[in-house]
Amino acid sequence: MKYSVINLEKHEDSRGKLIAFEKGVNCPFEVKRAFFMYDNDIPAIRGSHSNQKSQFLLIAVKGKCKIKVIDGQRSDSFILDSPEKALYLDKMIWKEISDFSKDAIILVLASEKYDADEYMVEITG
Image 1: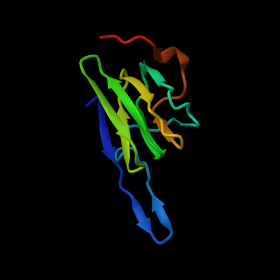
Image 2: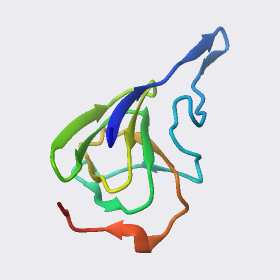
Image 3: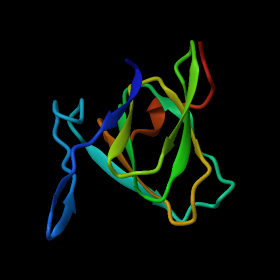
């Protein structure tokens, strides 16, 4: 599947909650880069591109957002509103991230280091 929701296993005890990411368990790639988005303008649309080489896991650590994905044949929208689920995106998936709650913090794990040359800013296919 070129994109899918992954339910993340939560570990909880009297000290609090923890979610881990492991290659081959709940992350299908080796993480080479991580970043997060926060203090987003409510009407802002982030992303609006696909990547030639990078795969991603997007997690709403706090708050929520909507992610529209297009794989060249179909389009789907997902609401990320819990740190207990992640949206996996394979390479060449168009993404538009919008409808941020005021408190949204979106963590993104990437399979590749940043490379501006791999960005595709037009929908193809």
